[in-house]
Image 1 (cartoon, rainbow, N blue to C red):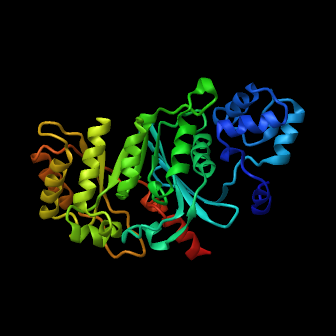
Image 2: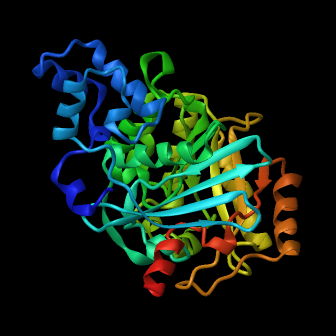
Image 3: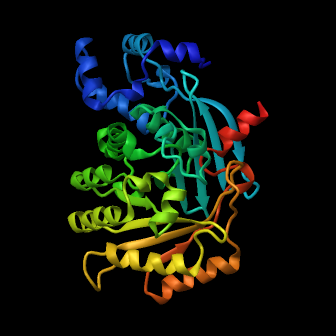
Length: 364
């Protein structure tokens, strides 16, 4: 049984890159192909025990157990929504930090895991439960990857279809481990990796411009989403304080440069808050902002994702009414702005980012 003490003493095998694993095996006199075998067990067979790696010599399995642990996530709480489509886990890490992971299923076709990149968050978005609790620390790449593998095990015979970095934390504030975790997840199955397509992964940022530009330079196929939530600086700074450092004019320029460099569509995320950012004025300002983001007339590579606010104890705002949501959508659609009104998932199990941790703390 995993304990915080045992997990603290040894490094996690999931924290090793493929090159680091190969180097470690070489020091033990093992052939290079052993790394591929081990990765196969970790990322395809999803084993939780070294002894399950049955094609490895017993001596190598013993050596792995002596020097590493298989994972650091200790489940503290698990909840399933009444509709049966959403599951959420609260995990504790060896240092006492806690993170959340959410698995959402859609009509049996799409299975998406929402993962955390940090314990807590320093961005302090006013309506976000994670932002309300503050920053604890960055996650290691292995701690990020483990969340995906946990969800994949929970699905059993069904295949995980999408991964979104939209849980606790700001991914671009923990850039290197996030990108390493993506590399691990997208390594092809024939090389022993998890094998999910890069276009099935989305990284969401509140607008850290240096991260957006660095991400564009990567030249990959991973999707980018920007948590916008307001189309004027005064309101966005109130909702998303990092806007004071990276105001909308600069953010739009970085977004447009991303599209020009990658020729890929990006998404603007918008949590609809009743009588706050769901007004006709904000909708029209968003239309203009999207037009400014697109690199040239007649080309639309921006999609707006709208979702009613998930309520949190630390924020007095509430979700927009159905009528106000539809009115907002109509402004965008009349202007030719592609948009999707998302369905909230897991409200009954506190599935919003940071909510289960806050709830668990109150109950404890």
